[in-house]
Image (cartoon, rainbow, N blue to C red; front, side, top):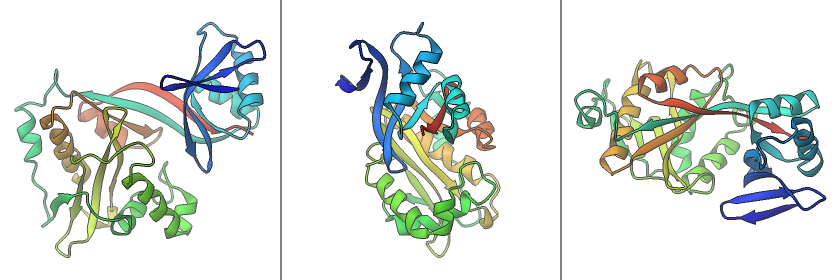
Length: 258
């Protein structure tokens, strides 16, 4: 059914005509059709849903919200309702330029360090940042730290999205304990904020904003023209990203097809 073409894989119907295209990956231990879309924009939505149900049964599928909602009505399980956000780094620098963001001070005796530590050093603050009630809380990680360590290891090794960029940064306290971090990766040439976290127990309001200013400025200083991220619907950080100049460019629903 699926055949590779350039950076896309295509799904073909019985008549040999391409019906969908997507980027192939793996998620939740299943094959993942990311950024799935109809090859023909005028295709019958019901036929598209039927095709996905038949040809991608058991897959994780990320695509248009209307497609995801219809799949949910037919028994699919929601994994994420997310928004892609981008920030232009050349046309709209912050007031005073990027140097002001790069020099954002960290308070409470914290300091920024390179993101060159193993997943075990990040896991405590990362898990605390996405506790119960957070839209990105993962039950399996909350129950088993080893699962969280494994996911962080895959991210830091470049297996999930792409190689980790030097503009990534961790924040440590006076005991050298990681309390926050922003892991940036190369997503097909686009700098991507893959994981940003802050231990809320540390009691530093605004730490996430300060850290993001620093890493975004680092990408701009390295010649980056744009930076992106994905945020889950209902995550209050979306307003922070908007305040920092990010704009929503796409919305998708990720589901597990039964």
